[in-house]
Amino acid sequence: MTLDILMIEDNAQNRYLAAFLLEQRGHRVRAAADGASGVEMAGTQVPDIILLDIQLPGMDGYAVARALRQIGALRHTPIVAVTSYAMPGDREKCFAAGCDGYVEKPISPETFVDEVEAFHRAATSGEPE
Ligand code: MN
Image (cartoon, rainbow, N blue to C red; front, side, top):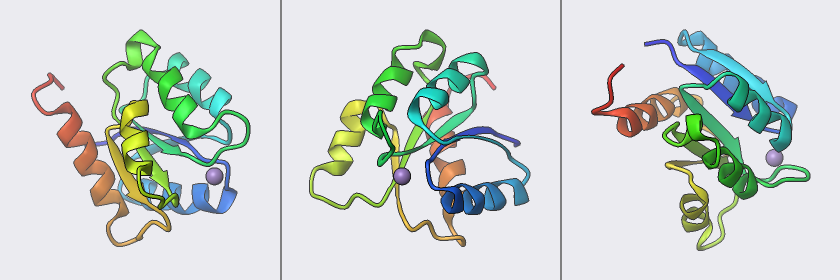
């Protein structure tokens, strides 16, 4: 299944690696380098899943997740935080802001795509395709 994936990530190297891995497995990737453009892109064309960096300039990932959840069409779109934050409570903060999942950076090239696909399956199981 080809997923339309929106990645919100300010680091060009991280964007490049994640997009490379995902596209290699047949997924389509659109990328935004900051939260505001990510929210706009997500609202304009609803993706199948959103990968969200938490450390972003300006609007941080928590604020982005909350803004995405306020858009009606995105209420059920899976949002996966991809972040190197490792403080106790960060995972909970991600979930409280509206994320469905959490992948730690640096991403593992061997498992990253499987993880993204699994989050999508888990979040959309039971919904019509
Ligand atoms: Mn970042």
